[in-house]
Length: 333
Image 1 (cartoon, rainbow, N blue to C red):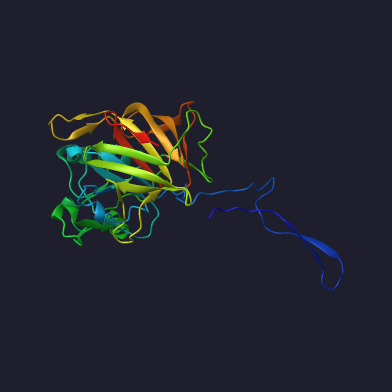
Image 2: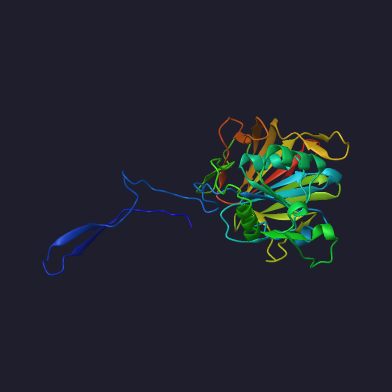
């Protein structure tokens, strides 16, 4: 609930003396104490380091995804084979089961660096392995460390789709390894306490349905739920459901970030051009507008702006950032 404090005067008759007194109730809505509104999705003043967790998005394993709704932001990132993986960010959560956990790709680190996040995965490509060791990023890897993870297989899937972890396990491991618990790096996005209205922005268009294909066999769709002012998430036309809560995943904000992609030098893994600049869309509350993005280096934050150059600020709520190849079409209806 947004916090809003006001000043008001209460007149009352002084007991035993008959004099009218005016008492000022404690408040923060005057010249010395202006109105203060906060956002609910995250404590924007918190210096706690977030966790960036690689979550399985293989078509076979979508049905066992768990704990993603509590992430304040999630990236959907293309990988080899025409599929995607998810990189979910969690901050200041006491405990939560998250799964299933999959292996890292080197470009995933670019988004963990932005927020000085502790990186969590189960396995890695050889490029990611080299980068994780050479950059000094704090990481938790099930193949290397084992302990913070466990196996569970409620849907009789292949073993690679069965690794889980929890916020509590990650925190305990990070403490044991003496990882720093705080950071001076802030969030990627700033937030508006109230809903952002895009309807009057330059080139604004209605966005009741957003279709984001990765290839011929994998696509993500969002449909606007006007009553609740969120977008419902679908994968390959099916509702994307949390396996534990049985609730459909939703999001308040969608960023579509168009990027160039190419094959890495081994001609197997993908190399995503996350550094540089490009185009995209910001979508919230039933409308979409074109935006620009830029990133100076792997460790710098990605900057998202409207066409006039002003900063994109998000509506108070969770966010999905969809990295989509410039070779793929985006459909907004």
